[in-house]
Length: 157
Image (cartoon, rainbow, N blue to C red; front, top):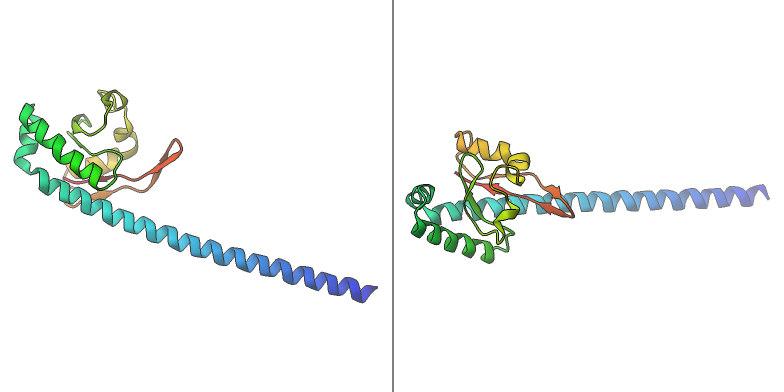
């Protein structure tokens, strides 16, 4: 009887060890995969935002900040092409006060007229680093959760 219970104990211990090893292996695999996907998405977003900056050009941004209607139309056209081609949720141009100069957001009332939208609270440090010259290249945020969605943002000077 004692030998049977010892055998049962060893089988149970082996089974638990096997389950633990398999779970650790899968956890490690998924963690590496998640990190790889995070890096790939960061590089992709940085490339998209840098391409967008080149497509818009400084003169168009200056005209847009001065409120020229034609510049707004050109900027929206470029932003919409970028947004739709790259399956982005939104593409926008903001000023130093986080006010939209142009956005592909259909309902701009979601963004609000002030910095109470996602920009200041979630991404203010990233945007400020662009405006104050701390970063001369594109900046990509860490993934963040808003509601049921995980988002990642990229900004360029």
